[in-house]
Each structure stands twice: as C-alpha cells, then as structure tokens.
Amino acid sequence: MPTLTHDGPLWTIDLGADENRFSPEWLSTVEGFLDDLAASTEPAALVTSATGKFYTNGLDLDWLGAHPDELGSYVARVHALFERVLTLPVPTIAALNGHAFGAGAMLAMAHDYRVMRTERGYFCFPEVDIHIPFTPGMNALILAKLTPQAAVESMTTGRRYGADDACAAGIVDAVAPIEELAEAAAGRVRDLAGKDRTTLATIKATMFADVVTALREGR
Image (cartoon, rainbow, N blue to C red):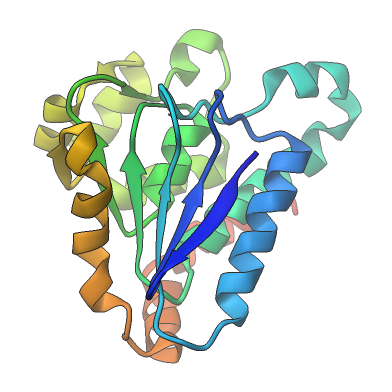
C-alpha cells in the first residue's frame, strides 16, 4: 500500500512495491494523503514514486472484473484522482521508477512535471491494444499535456517508450539513473514549494478548466 513521508517541504507518496494498481483501498489511502497535503499550510511540494519495477499499472482490472456493477463509480473515482493531482495547489512531480501503464501513465501526466528512470521501465498507453477506449476525461488530460504528434503516436499505437524516447517526445521532462532519480525529482520542485497556494490553484484551475470539465462528466 502507499506510504507518505516528509522531508522539509517535500511530501513524497510512495505508491507501493507491487504493480500498485488502483484498488479501492489504494485509492482511499492516496486520497487521504492528498487531503492531508491540501489541509496543510506550510510550503510544500509533492513527489510521487514507487518501490520496485512499477510506478503504477493503473486500473485494477481484476477488481473491476469481480465488481462490474461498480464500473461507473470506480471510473468516476479515478477521474477525481486525476483532477485532484492536476489542480493541486502545490508543485507536483512524478518520479517514474519503473513501468507506468494506462491509467498509471495518466496519473503521471496529471503532475506538473515528470522525470523517468533511465535503466528500465516503460511509459505506455496500451488502451488501443487492450480494447479500452479513452474516456473523454482521460483523452482531455493527455491532450492537455502532450503535443498533437506525441498524443497521436502514444494513444493510437500503444508504443512503449523508454526514458530517452519519452523525453524526446516531451512525455517526461528529464531522465536520471535510479540512484539519482529521487534527487532529480526533488530538485525540480523543492525551490517552488513556497509559491502562494491560492494563486497557484487559480492558475491551474484556469489552465486546465476544459480538462476538469471533461473529467467531471458522468460524476
């Protein structure tokens, strides 16, 4: 399960040591951490990462298979997580320690910045190959963060991007070996932690207003 640690202004959520799929329990834990961060008043920045070979593989398809009647409420909850991270009133960065697939890759896209491990791990939107079309909200989130060319390639081919290719496509902002990943992520947001939260929240809400509207559809 996810864990939260503090180092000065840095709040780091470790998403877990497994595939870190979005089970209801996993979602509740992360939501609680984000509640705590939003309720704090001191300077802060958020880093998310994980332990092991996965950042997160996204939707818990096994749980969904066992609870098909809860599909709508589950997807709405995932959309709410994306919206929460996208508009969080503090700087955010995803440190991709390993594979980020599907909704896990979308969670990374919801952050302000992304840095990816160089030695192993792929970033991928596999929806075209697993026959799961993007929801309007997911589509809007990705299009807001990528160039049209990168969006077409990543969303319609299911390409698996290594770190260097992901950086070249603008999917991630930087790359680093695993032993430097945490500091590379922290270094990008640490000095931004004191930005005024009200101002930053307004900027993000305005910047991503269309994405927020799409993510809220059906909720």
